[in-house]
Length: 212
Ligand SMILES: Nc1ncnc2c1ncn2[C@@H]1O[C@H](COP(=O)(O)OP(=O)(O)OP(=O)(O)O)[C@@H](O)[C@H]1O
Ligand SMILES: [Mg+2]
Image 1 (cartoon, rainbow, N blue to C red):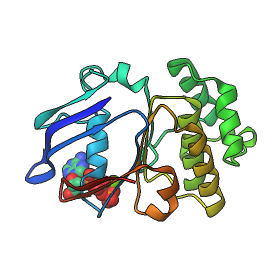
Image 2 (image 1 turned 180 degrees about the vertical axis):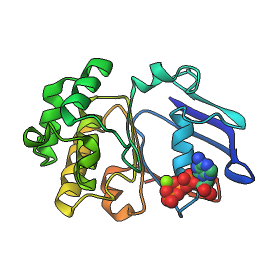
Image 3 (image 1 turned 135 degrees about the vertical axis):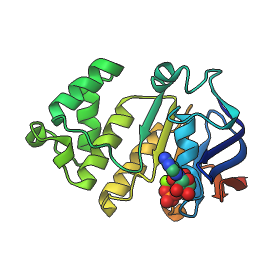
Image 4 (image 1 turned 30 degrees about the vertical axis):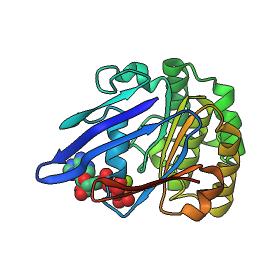
C-alpha cells in the first residue's frame, strides 16, 4: 500500500533521507525508531506529501502523495510530533473536521472520553490554549474517530501521563486490523506488544527492519 523507492531528501547540505526504499502493507504495525535527527519525521512528511523528494518515488495505494494529497489524506489519520498552532476553539475545530472529512462528532466525543479528556467544559477554549497533553489527547481522539486505512503517529505519547498512555495503547489495539499503523517512538518497551515490525533508522538510512 505504501511504496517508498530510492527516496532522497535534502535540506541544503543536510541529507535527511539517503536513498531509502521500504514498503508498508496492510496489517503492518510498525515501530519506527532511531536517534534524534535520524530522518523519521522526514520520512513521514514525505509519505504525507508535505515534501517533494529530491530523488526517488513514493506511492500510496498507487497515488502520488504530493499530486494527490487531498485524496490520500482522506485515508490517513496522522498525529504529528508537535501539535499544530490552531487558534480555532475546540467547537469550531471539531465542526471543521466533521464537515471536511466526514468524521462523526459523536465518535470524536466518544474517543475523547475514552482518553479521559472532558471536551464539554472546554469547547469554547482555543485549541492553542489547551495543555500539551490535552492537545495530544484530542488529536488522538480525532485520529481514532476517523477510521483510516493508514494511521501515523509521530511520538504521540511524549506529553501523555502514564494513564493516558495506557488508554492510548488499549484503544490502538482495538483499531489495528486491516490497517497500516506507523508509530515513531523512542520507547519500544511501551509499544512492543502492539507492533509486528521494528525498524531502526540512522543518518537518513534504514539500518534494520525486522518482523517480530
Ligand atoms: N524542514 C527542515 N528544514 C531543514 N532541515 C530539516 C527539516 N526537517 C528536517 N531537517 C533535518 O533533517 C534531519 C532529520 O530530521 P528529522 O526531523 O527527520 O529527524 P527525526 O528522526 O524525526 O528526529 P527526532 O527523534 O528528533 O524527532 C535533521 O538533521 C534535521 O535538522
Ligand atoms: Mg521526529
